[in-house]
Image: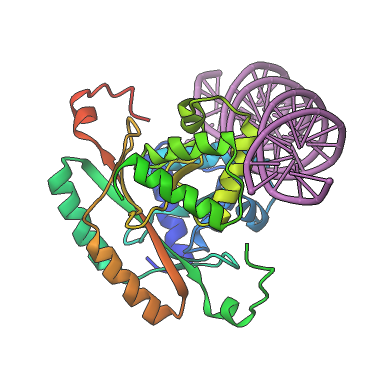
Length: 151
Length: 151
DNA sequence: ATACTTGCAAAAGCTTTGCAACCTT
DNA sequence: AAGGTTGCAAAGCTTTTGCAAGTAT
């Protein structure tokens, strides 16, 4: 499930399963989401759309996609909701630069899945999911050490 | 560093180190934070204050506490900033109920610290920190299975 | 034809900022 | 006394909602 096309098709399938209509704005939104593996902020998402559409529509759509389990809302940075497709095999472990904000996917987070099982067993919580963010300063920003850029 | 008093004293020490003044509103805010191990939303924090104070003051204070490394902003739920003291030994791994919103601290997240080291080594990121949230339905909410309560 | 969706506009929230008065150091 | 802080009010954003018109099924 790696190519944007595959991811898009998967999402469209889910949309139909959820009895949501495949409208023009929704096509654009799903395509934009399918192109990005890392979570995208709503602002960025709006910019990425092939065809502009109303903010209200984007918000409403994201809400429905979330309900339908097609999209996950990730709370990486304060003050902006970020979203990502939950295509099969997708991870939700990220490495975020505190300085430039770049978000990378973290592929090898097996230990967390292990931990998740333990937590499920001990806590009695059901339907467990997780989300991990590692924050730090990326190599690029370590080089550009302008102290003023750092918040 | 377990008792609220110890945590409060620690925070006050940091405040002085950061050359921030110990005003009345700041005392209240730090005390409220020291009483809670789990992250508190701003709304809740405001309610917990012994003495009411202006929202603007709370926001400005949280901003400074964050800058001074006294407080961590956690993005547990969308639409509300949550804060917690970063007293020594404090963890940042949580178990959150998707239904009732209760937040519990997760004490045994060793594997994540291991992973953090690996990630630091491989990625070249510096000053790595992490934040993990496990989401699920808590035992209580599993019992009260009113489907309408679940979003 | 039906009823789900969209855009526009307005409302509602949350967060930030300006400024004079106030209080800690 | 000096300057960091506060409260109040207003401005800025982000997110939500109402409604008539538009469109996928």
